Image (cartoon, rainbow, N blue to C red; front, side, top):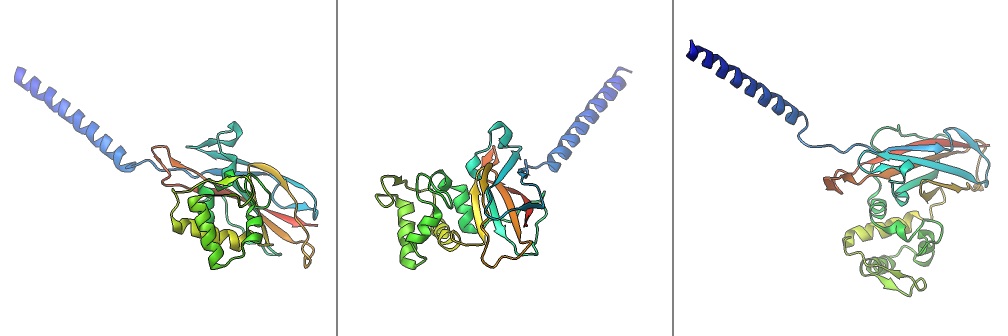
Length: 248
């Protein structure tokens, strides 16, 4: 009788152990590794389908929330990593659905956004260093200018734009720097699109010479997160929001 009781007890213990092991195995197989979550980007202002006046200031406000990086309302997001694109779309805009992973940036722009370029440079206004637009005026897109700019960025420079020094960028490969330079020289002076950095500010839309009534502009706000805290820099995701503006 005693042996039978021990046998029943041992069988129960073994059964519980196997059940616990199977449950743990199922949980682990369902979550083999932690996944990064998409940043939530929202253009708070202006509202979608707003109407604007040419050459009049328009305020914008963007919110960003990311599970790993934090929330812009608590000042946990680096505002220099939030980009607003204002693009002329004619009269038939093609809108990308929001709430899904946004298409990746062109390689050159991706390098600019994920390095420290915006600490010293803006697109159209002077900061510590010259704007990208000023750079395109001084350096037309030629092979020799490309090579010079790549060298200046990689090794650093001084005395070219005043007293401020360009720091070195050994963390970037020559190929990455070259792609960034090519993007700047090709796109910074594009009259159909303007770029703004930050979660809030204002902009004006200048009336094109050939504009028609009801011209449409697409505003795209985006943020690239820093990936998982356990593996920073990996599995980075880009979230975005899109609204449409119409001229009077």
